[in-house]
Length: 184
Image 1 (spheres, rainbow, N blue to C red):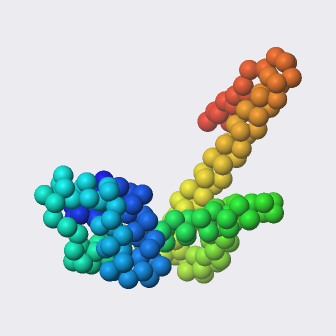
Image 2 (image 1 turned 45 degrees about the vertical axis):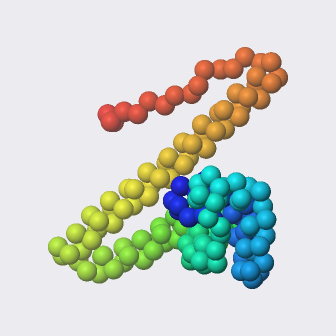
């Protein structure tokens, strides 16, 4: 049952609503659709139990077109877009290219490089303020780079352990890195 809508069509099983929506999308006229729905046993049972046997009317279908069907169309559009984006990402990654986020990070870093020239040219208090803002942003970018490298290392270590375990070899303890604030 559709929990956000309460009309006769909204209370039909999802599979039936989806079938109706596809037929609406194909441009089928209201009269044959209503005749089809009225002839289905599950529709007749629903009308008898939840709507005191009151039949489906053209108004019910019209309301569904304005509400539930529009929601379904929007959902289909989102699903189609997500699928296309997934295919595009898979195509980009299949060619050995860097990930989209890596590419965007490179682009942002290049934009910051251009911005540093403007900060230097500004000079004075404004230049220093701009430089501090740039530094904070660059620190965040670098933090993201370091995090991504750490994830890659952990993933590589895990894969190495799996291979050793498959071969029946002993697995060495994990590598750890100590970070110290003291200069050596």
